[in-house]
Length: 423
Image (cartoon, rainbow, N blue to C red; front, top):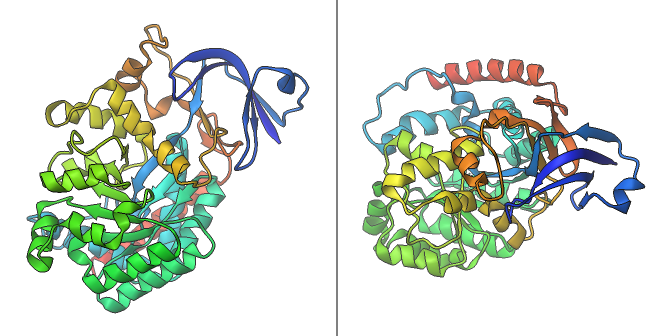
């Protein structure tokens, strides 16, 4: 099975050089992309797409998502107006995640996978929480993403905030999932994970040769609580578990780290994921990657599924708070590929592509593409998406599932969720 992309303006995502060529895209996790040559001339593709005047390039990766928040859009106000970050969690997100059941999780996953696909992302790194519906939750998400055709790296958000029994369920779910899938050990944040649970998570991480996926210093409260409760900072706690020695570890946010902790991040093997718009929405501060090294990638933190938008916002907000330019914004946008490749995770091979119908009023070249990336490109320009060699979006429509049926299902589940949140 293969797809022939004719007359492409092919953009190499690493060198940012354009080439006029035909592409033969092989199906499968290890499928290849062959440029015009004998293999193409002698092949019989299952589908041929004319890409005249279109840009074809590598698809995208969401470095940090929360599918559990997918049904929050348009929901009513919380019972109490939050006055700080912890209250935002307590009265909004922790109220929501405790109200989820298996049907709501499935609807959230399907809706998120569709949104990611249509916005050009064929791989999602997700951080899930559903304290009253933990067993089997990761499998539900995985099946939904597989159904749409989006690859994934999942984890369950282990936390003591709902009691040690719920924390143990999170550990059990993580282990059950890792038995058969690639994944990470999810932790909420230092201030909701005690020493007992942290050590159990670390043992699990070593057993499965995995890494942590944890929120770090998203708000000053995380750092202050950790210092007061444990007599050490967040990074010292993580270092003691061995998590910083794993190149699979993902540290989300990292807004309020001390100079010492920033050096610990730089000297570690862990990756940082930036979530600009979520930080703005929660009024927690502004990301500055100047002293965190070059292992920085971008996520959405569940705000949306549009990685082009995330990259552009990282650049614009960073003009006042970060050392960021066109090149580094694009590097952060693409660094998730590097993270996945270096750690041997499957599903982000070269046969993951987007076809962009980008109608620019100005010339596009090797030298100025990044200017178009920051100031011109939009998710709306994505016409086709190929995931592991399979056409999952054609002419801006998902081909793998019935989107209208999914949306009807998700609206029904959202109504149930909102009603439950008010109880």
